[in-house]
Image 1 (cartoon, rainbow over the protein chains, first blue to last red):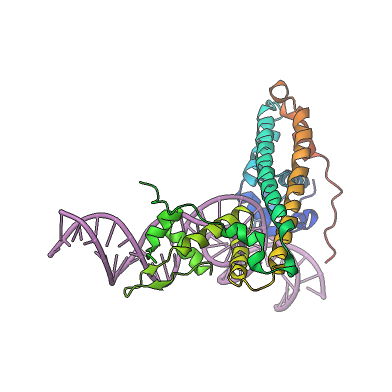
Image 2: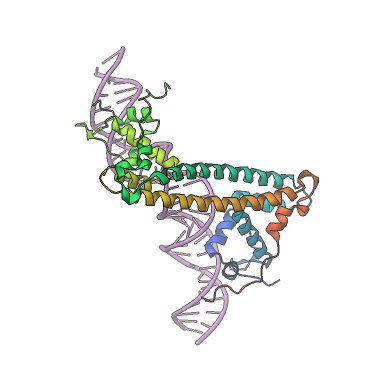
Amino acid sequence: MENLTIGKLARQVDLGVETLRYYERRGLIEPQSRTDSGYRLYKEDARQRLQFIRRAQVLGFSLDEVAELLSLSDRPEQSAAEVKRLTRAKIADIETRILDLERMKSALSALEEQCPGHAGTTAECPILSALNQQAPEPEQGEPA
Amino acid sequence: MENLTIGKLARQVDLGVETLRYYERRGLIEPQSRTDSGYRLYKEDARQRLQFIRRAQVLGFSLDEVAELLSLSDRPEQSAAEVKRLTRAKIADIETRILDLERMKSALSALEEQCPGHAGTTAECPILSALNQQAPEPEQGEPA
DNA sequence: CTTGACCCTGTAGTCGACTACAGGGTTTAT
DNA sequence: ATAAACCCTGTAGTCGACTACAGGGTCAAG
């Protein structure tokens, strides 16, 4: 039941004091109590909660999503369906981003292989040529 | 040699007028001239340049990088080495991001498969369990 | 000749996750 | 008793790529 001031907790979990207060504003964590002078006091379980936050972030969840996960975790009787749903949505999101990146990578790689580098000029560079490729006709814009 | 006002150009390339002015501030594009009253006038080749910008962005380049690519493209006599270097760096950057995302995805997928969903409670959810896993010892923080 | 659509500059707001003050009060160590 | 180290609130700044005003001037149509 040892009480921790925000500074001690911050050092223990290797976060800035400002970050902990920020998490509090975001609704992720709250001190168990306050001293008479208003100092935040945390219990040890705050470390657990902060670790939860960090791990969820590493898995790709935003702070808003972490807040949801935490509130679900705080109700152990509730169905796990929502957690599963959030996780699936996150996986789908990540897959989309991977596909986007794969597309960029393969386009870049194909061009990079063709590029003569120091052996040629920018005028002969297929990367720049691809970017400079003739534009489609003027287009009179959307007939809004 | 038809001159375009910023609004006409914006409609043709489907960008906002503000965006074009923003690109100008960022050093990506400049009007060929100005009217006496200060209106920007662009030539048709501005479309080409804006297309270059868009394509480079799609390939993952930041506006600062696009600016570099454009200035290289503006010097056709120069070696293509720098373009190749930028491209390789971008590919490496993308590969790193893909790996990060792949790691997240496989961690999430493994947990998601184990999650009972509506058939179980949050207390039985392996996703939340993983996030709540016992933290490493208190750690007295960095002995700064 | 006036209305409306356009243009100008300059500044501020958006998103996400912090990070950094400013201007105080409190606690701890000497 | 005083200085250092801590804590408080509240606000503003950072990054990137826009986007949105505010408060003007200009230009084309009726």
